[in-house]
Image 1 (spheres, rainbow, N blue to C red):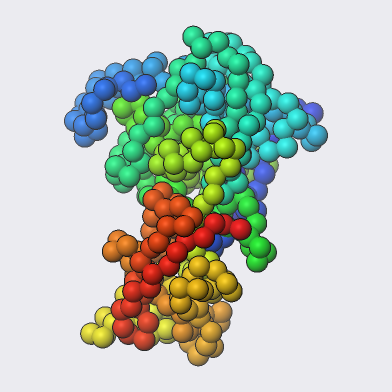
Image 2: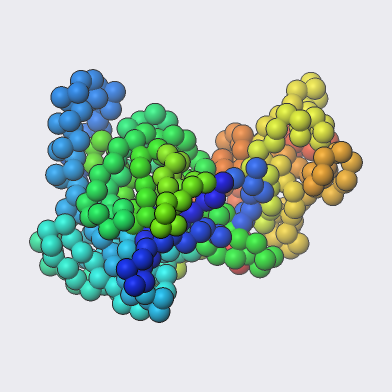
Length: 386
């Protein structure tokens, strides 16, 4: 099954295709505007077919003017993606992979208005880019950011973008899961890639050309930026087929990162310095003998490796070193991270999401680990991703 940066259409001589995501810090070993000024009761608003239609029609009419198509020219031909208006100063948010390698680009609005744009900042860790335009302020309809922490699994969401170049396309789905991780687009000094966290999973239809477009709640708030899909099929043109498993960068990552990108051009993520398994199966827990004093198996982020000299190393976290589990590739002896700042860690994504949305380099965190059947607290001062 392939993960693809499924939302950028690239084209050359009339053909379009999608690049495969080859693209941790925190490395997880794979197992892989407002329409209403007040918060909307999503359960109530979707009670009847008529209410559903009216809500979606009103949502589209209000939000679509703030969604744009982004066309790029590169040495390989060109590309097509999506984005949305961030403010009245002409800043447009999209994915980094939409504008990667762009030698020239334009931003096309649903009204037919077109304007040149310039990439002023990028963030490879979360796959974000900021485009600055000199668009007429009357054309700019900024879309508000919602609080992605408040989204619930099963909540109705809407994606608007330009799949396959079909501008202003709207699709509907639900939030399928939260706190997922994806590979970032930036290599770590150890030769791997860093991880991107706090990813929203959705079954709203996302296809090539949707990248960088907004994922919205029914209040018309952006709760994510569509980034990728997971699929094991392609069409006759070699483009990935939507499988109902899409991924979006959370709005709380956007809220934290984008203002700094606009002001300073770069954003520094906190660095712990571990490689960890996303989740352990019961069989793996038994092989590792990960139990507390009461003999109960515990869930968490299992530390496979600690980077020499990293904050985790200086704070005393321990990686796995012993080949005694009977399972190929599974070493024992590593810490199991079960909480950070008293917040439970069930899987690696919980740890990464907390760090990326709440912490900065220089901050201290208290990590609770299970070591030799004992719970132990370790205080660590976070670094900056190298």
